[in-house]
Amino acid sequence: MAEFRIQPLARFEGSSAAIRRPKEIACFSYDENHQLRLDDSSLRYYYPPRLPVDLSQGFDTFKNLDDNADDHLDALLTTIMEMEKKDGKRCEADVVTWRGMMTKIMAAPFDYFNDFEMNATCFQGTIFLEENHSYKLAEKAEQNSKPPRPGAHSQQMMSYWGYKFETLCLLPAPWGETSREYIEGRENEVVSNYAQYCSVVKTGIGNISLVLGGEVDAVWDTKPTDPTQPTNWIELKTAAAPLTPADALKHERKLLKFWIQSFLLGVPRIVVGFRSASGILTHLEELDTRSIPGNVKRQGKASWDGNVCINFAAAFLDALRKTIGRGEGGVWRIRRRERSPVIEIWKVEDAGTGGILSREFVAWRE
Ligand code: A3P
Ligand code: MG
Ligand code: MG
Image (cartoon, rainbow, N blue to C red; front, side):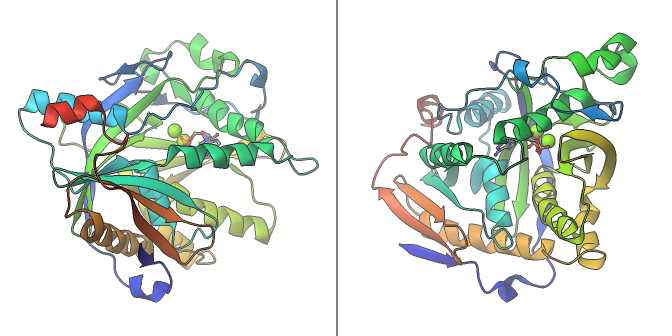
């Protein structure tokens, strides 16, 4: 068992380790039936909603994806494999994973309640890192079994609010190509989380290169035809409108996740939809992703430090490579328990790659 210490955080303070600007190298979509498509067909466009609006409306018709099956890294690996076939060269990286895994790692220094379990394997010199699905399912079941506080809404309803907000903000085509009827009728659209657009980016933290896949909610204008130009991606987030100083601190802590999630894929702007405790969307705020850490430090309560997150991630990934990145095969577990000052890493299988790599991907690479 190897341990990577999170505390004391002073080791990670100071200017941040080198970071490479994330660059999209491929994308994929899930269509409205959640079928994988190796294209940008589920890309959506942002256009602000009419306010105020009730986010609970339509909950009874919510098309909520069943995520009980373990999809491992499958869609990401299929996309990488198709890209390699097209380009005629291997996509090299030290670490390949979903953006969500890196979000959990980067948030660990300040998110004391965040606990996670991941599986990792080293294959052809690259570490492939996935969520330990059975752990996530158990965690979700526990959350959903807790009765909501008196007067509060259920977890399912609060989760619906997030998707409803997306439906109210998104267009299937750029604004100029969308009918007025569609824009005004968004309030009556059935809310579904089956469709997704996912970006696959190449990025780097410290001396580790990464390929990350993650969902991007929308584009502000259109995706530039020139691939060297950055895209004006938008992340949509709902948040309870802070009313008291305690709420403001809670919101600042929430910004940690907002920032990391967008930082990792190079999403420059976040549109926050503020809602009342009963789910009425009242106003919007546009955040410039890059300026969030500075604002938290200077104008807020400085409850987290973005440079510490970056330096921590750089050091952790380096340690991960030293621990498991030398060998070939075998499966490792990576665990952080709630409030724990350490991340634990240990071997759970001596050979093979567990379920982490799809058979197609391994066959293609070998
Ligand atoms: P909010 O983030 O506005 O709450 P994302 O913001 O990552 O694009 O996710 C879209 C929505 O999915 C979220 O909206 C939330 O409603 C829902 N969601 C994401 N992660 C969730 C989780 N772990 N549990 C429940 N709902 C989640
Ligand atoms: Mg999303
Ligand atoms: Mg979002």
